[in-house]
Length: 392
Image (cartoon, rainbow, N blue to C red; front, side, top):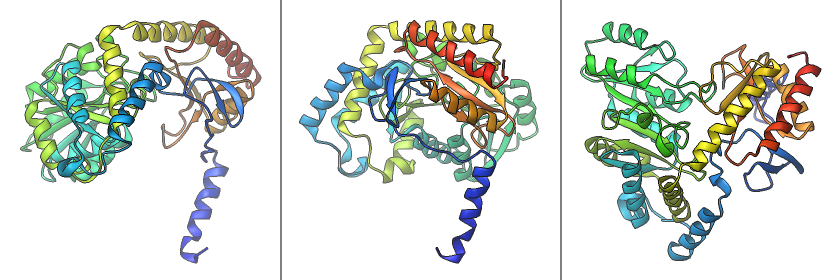
């Protein structure tokens, strides 16, 4: 190896010694309640497949038909020759589903954040960002080169104080996650909106973990708080509850149009494939017809969380199906995850930098495809491993 790269081996060794090295497992089956991982059949408790759409038969069939009609890819950026009628239809359906003026598609939720923030603010502007916002929001803020002021987690009062201290900016943008992916808590978007109105701030929410989970038929946090038309930019992902891939921004028609004109991931990268686009259209149709999957998701989540609390586990302050099992020490979390896997439960340990130092955990992701028998098995295994490792 080139001597100029010697530092890499040292960094890798440091990660291993501190329990932060990520050993990535390989999945060999469709994403469902039961999956095959590294050749072993296990119960899946770490997927974002909230509604079970990732292996939905109807969506798979629609994706196959889209390939037959359109091929496997659009083969160009959308501003040249890569805009399919499917893309236009999906943007229209997302806007209707979210009850807003318009929507624009991106390659992922991460790309949607990287695209939007540098368009809404310039280097001479200011951003107010929740201290636990997603990494893609942090990176989007960096790309914008605007001043970034971090406010205390889910604290509208601190947000207001920070805005008062930074009023001499032409454009002010407040950004928050809707559902925070590591803790499962919900942003007080109604109170944040009031602060934004009072101080003439733009409001942007990343609802990656609220899509398909909160609101009527999974319409998300804006619907949950009845703030339709009041949030300037609502970022969403199509890879979690929707089960496919891609991202979007929904909101004010002028915001969406300026993104079409200036957002770099839209201008310089090919968009979603026909199969992906059609599958998402199918998922939205399912949600518009019935909220049974959403209801089952919440039933499962409440059942599991109550069971874990009775066993004595610390599940933090989750308000959603995201269930963190707080362990603190990252080496303990890694050992816990390894023992779970040996007992047939796939639930990954999360440590720094995904979560703050000293707050390592097992994050359990509940899905509508789980049956009560799956949840009961998981509770028994967690109890066994928890006692083994002196956690409960």
